[in-house]
Amino acid sequence: MSDPQRREFLAVTAAIASLAALSGSQPAVAGDPSFMNNVPDPDLSGKELPTFKFALEKSTGKVIGNSFGKEATVAQLPISKGIAGVSMRLEPGAMRELHWHATAAEWAFVIEGRVRTTVIDPQGLAETNDFDPGDVWYFPRGHGHMLQCLGDKPCHFILIFDNGYFSEFGTFSITDWIGHASAPLLAKNFGLPESAFASFPKEEVYFARGALPPAEPSVPLQGWRLPPETHRYRMLAQPPHATYPGGREWRVDSSRFPISKTITGVVLDLDPGALRTLHWHPNADEWQYVLAGNVSVTLFGSHGRFRTEQLEQGDVGCIPQGYGHSIENTGDKPARILIGFNAGIYETIDLTQWIAGNPPDVLATNFGQALALMQKLPRQDVFIADESGRG
Ligand code: MN
Ligand code: MN
Image 1: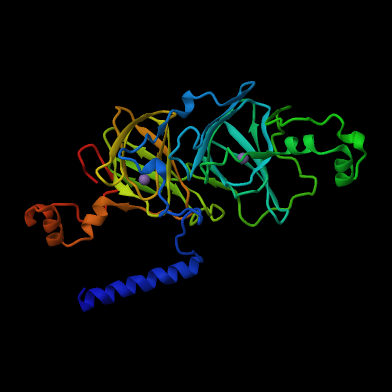
Image 2: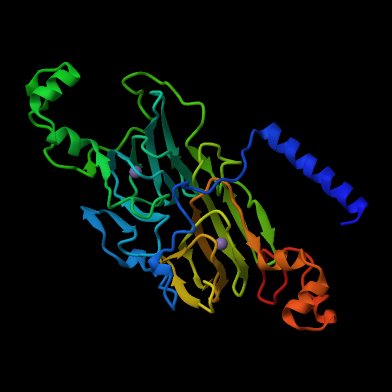
């Protein structure tokens, strides 16, 4: 680096540092500090890469009435250790009852219909929010919450958890707990006669069913005591955060949605033939759910291991942290993919960007090719390439 280059570099670095100080942002941190990249995952240590696809919407899951929850945990998709996902549909009047997740935060994206949630935090502050299609919620690990279908039409949403094992360790439901506590314990706990609890459910209800909720949320027993950070982010109500010749992307991490400290969400649109170019994520696993279209996803795992999966609407894909991958729209219709990462800060290194950051003589030596050819490679990041390779 020459002196003028270094001066320019240092000026840019100082500007970034002062911006970070202004916004109070922290350095990027991987989603789960207990995740040790240097402990080999047996599922990823073989001669071949295992499947990274699961047909979520073709599975049955848990069905009660016209409501369902279908899940993709390590049981369904063994390499998905860092992220689990659920497709949930609620019929009008149905509620996913009050519960918490002892070992996972919950992030959600509403596909259709309307949803109402109430969530409590350890300060006793509670927020009730209404959600439309394209809206997102985030509930920190362990915070109690409920999900309710709003209005007279069913709702459908995708849940993403920052722990692929979350289901095995269970969700903690309020009826399951109260149903198994003794009558004297409940009477003392709530200051009511034992008889008050005589007809409470004895087993977990999971999906409760009752009257349609009121159009406006009613006041909680303690009155409104709102938390400082909202749990709702209206992602698709905004213009895309970036557009390219072959597609567009909405992205929400903790820089836009401060409470979402451990999960980043993306909606990626790819026009027919377009490619989300070869890249990897240094700090997170990636979980994909195809909202529309047909895509081809490739995975590179070192030692010549390369695998391709074809995903259609309702299918899930999972890319382990640090593994190379790409997504291509192989259909003749627009494709839309919902993507979740188990980190609150988005990070990517794109192959085009990496190459553009290297001197051409280095590339010529690395590939054993003429310098003239290296000079033709992209000189900047190509995030999405269109069907003709234009970025
Ligand atoms: Mn939940
Ligand atoms: Mn990716």
